[in-house]
Length: 93
Image (tube, rainbow, N blue to C red; front, side, top):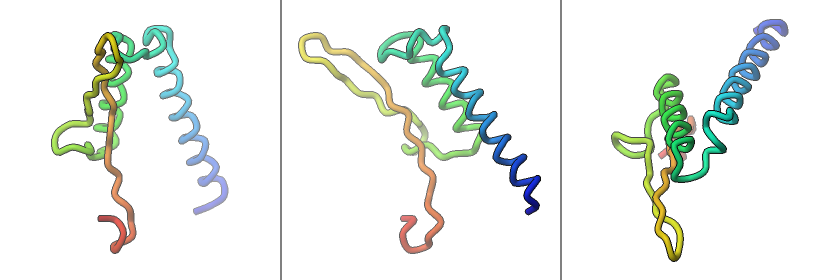
C-alpha cells in the first residue's frame, strides 16, 4: 500500500469516527442518560452501525443486554455487546 493511500485510509477512519461522535454527542440524545429516550436512540444507532459493519451480536440474536440498577427505585438500562473474533486460530475461541 502506498503512503498516500495509507493516509487516505487513516483520514477516512478518523472522519467516520468523528461522525459517530457527532451523532452520539448530539443534543437530540439528551446526554444518553440510562433509561431515557436519548439512551434508547443511542442504543438503536449503535446497533444499526454494528449491523452495517457485519459485526456479530454477542448474544445469539441480539446486541442488547438488559440490566437493572438502583437501590430504592429500580431502573432498567441496556448495554450493547458485540463479538469480534480474534485472528489467532488457537486463542480466538
